[in-house]
Image (cartoon, rainbow, N blue to C red):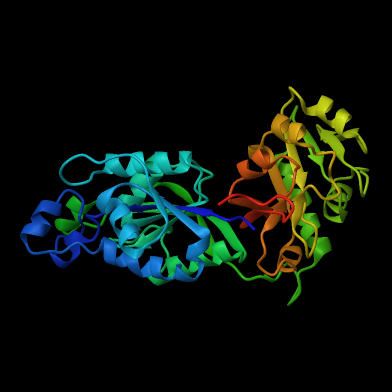
Length: 380
């Protein structure tokens, strides 16, 4: 299992100041709110969320910005953490939040937790990459955006569920914000500012077109529809072995091998049951995508039964082009254990992200942890 799970933390220290001061928000009025006796509350809201992560503290490393943007609270709570960037004198700003987002995602955080309100969500949205999962800890006056947990405790519990290996579905959450100046004049005017990728609470066995039980066959039909809609012309799709991907190919009308590795291009089989050398020749220098599944009950996605997908093949394709295909039924057999990689190259194994996106149904993705096999442990 991965020794360390990296979570980014950003606190907007000014979030929520305007609420108790009856200023309908905090954007641009923090000084006035403080003058009226308002007290910062974002750190205390964040503390509630972080306390929920105590049971998995030994598996975590936080990354954060200095001082009130996260480092002070993490040090006080005794969490292992690394401080990135720097802060100038005076109050923090939207630019500080955006610089923090950039630094955290560049550092490879599996999840970025941020505490604030709708203004903070706007700042996050302006800087974050589309595929970076984030989760808001509600600490602002206005919480209209669909990127926040319902409470700080809910945010902490959801983050802990991810670290422990629970199935966490990814979805798009809208970022919306009211015009505070208009609101203070008695006018309600909201705007849409974008969307963020957020984890959403999901059950282990969500019903799929069948009452009570997930139908593997129907899920593969759904996945085939999604894949067919998203085919990229001129891109070579490498199908790993296993019944899941073989069934997926059958639903696409493709004749692949059950236990071999096959290559698909423009909706047709380009090569079947390839060797490692043949596979490398087919992907080296070509745009490619790698589709693998997990071994049920065990969790290996690389290094068991698919040794044709060697370290040099993985590097040629790029880890960012890995797609894990697995039904929720199959993931549930892991009982919370992570997906495993054992490529034979420890440096490459360590380069895998802390969590990967798993295609589990039609346009349904889950965020699931990745670890290292016992034969290839990761240094903490």
